[in-house]
Amino acid sequence: MSPDRKPDKTTDPGRIWVQTGVPQFKDFDRWQQVGPEEAGMVSEMTLRNELSGGTPVVREFEKEWREWIGGKYSLSVMNGSSALYSAYFGVGVGPGDEVICPTYTWICTIAPATLLGARPVFAESNPETLLVDPDDVRRRITNKTRAIVVVHLWGFVADMDGFLKLSRDTGIPIIEDCSHVHGGKYKGQMCGNLGAAGCWSFQGSKPVSGGEAGIMVTNDQEIFERACLLGQVNRIAGVDLVTERYAKYQPLGVGMKFRSHPLGIGLAKVQFGKLDALNARRRKYVETIEAGLESIPGLHPVKQYPGAERAGFYGFPIHHVPEETPGLSTKQLIEKIQAEGIPATADPYGLLHLLPIYAEGFDLFTRNRGPLCGDYPGYRPGDFPQTEQMRDRLIFLPMCSDPVPGAEDFVLKRLSRSVA
Ligand SMILES: Cc1ncc(COP(=O)(O)O)c(C=O)c1O
Image 1 (cartoon, helix red, strand yellow):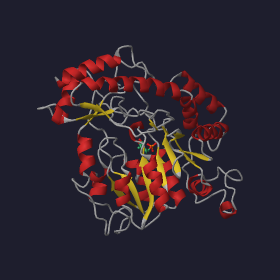
Image 2 (image 1 turned 120 degrees about the vertical axis):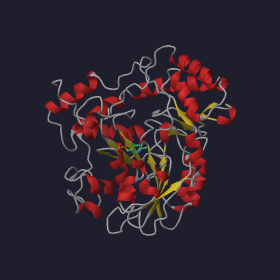
Image 3 (image 1 turned 30 degrees about the vertical axis):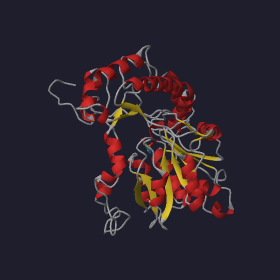
Image 4 (image 1 turned 180 degrees about the vertical axis):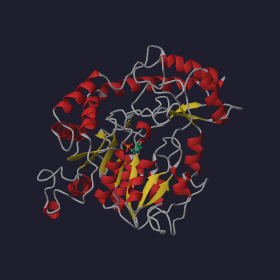
């Protein structure tokens, strides 16, 4: 660039959001998410012209993933949001319905349901586990509730006994948002195969990354076929849609395309092969630090449900109890930890009910139509006191995916100094 040319803010590499997983803890993490194997896969697929539709790699990956999860049907899509869109459409979410969703999650968990015309109904999370609370969800069920979405946030596994009982009692399907929990289990069963449908994101920074990609798994043929109808135009003729009910709509379905880019799936396929090792390294790092917190006042690991086996480790939150560190608020403590050389942060997500779109409502379809206007009640601060307090007291430690020897010890020593 000539010296007199100003940097273009859309192409200046310093400003572009880096979407692939990069070490959060520089100098302590040797991990590189993508390397020659991924590049090789992309190059081979490109040279074979495997660039569109349900290519051999796409179908192989769908099979590998569903067999690993233990589900009957799998459908790769362009991202986790469209996996959720497919699942909501699959269970028949539509205008006038309500979908119950934790307020503590990423917006894409619920946005697809809203775009299908359903109203989000937010719920509290358990302050010890950070995960949506089945008892609170039960209280929010109405005769309009069409689905409940459970999120295994940050790789922690939700109280699936509670949710499956709720589903049996009410007939309301549970959709599992597994975007953060690649490989988690509940009482020996894979997450994503417990409810009506499981949805995964393979977005850049996820444990299995395709840059951008996603997948939905279900045991329910109706859900699968509706998902095919929704977003797989022209891909599935004579292959996936098998029942009389929908056969006449193939191959065009409803004419939308949410299908995956084969190169994204090729990347995810390579990354899938590395997942067990990644989970093992992250687990060791996280569990070593959590065990060490026992001797540090005011800092506590996030609790897990009996029978839950977390995975993915998409974030590393711990609780701060300010009452145990007199004179030190969570914000001040985070600053002290940062000053000690540990790139800790506050919660990066926020709560959905406080976003303007959900707090104030939004004329989604214009002319005062859609689920977020009319009699939409909106939300305000204080509506979810337990989740709000919990969220404000979280500290996120840097994840290490391939820590250098002694990284855990370094973190623990610096945390001890920070609370002193
Ligand atoms: C909990 C959760 N759900 C859904 C999504 C949506 O996935 P995608 O970004 O692949 O559309 C994400 C993405 O970060 C997520 O974190």
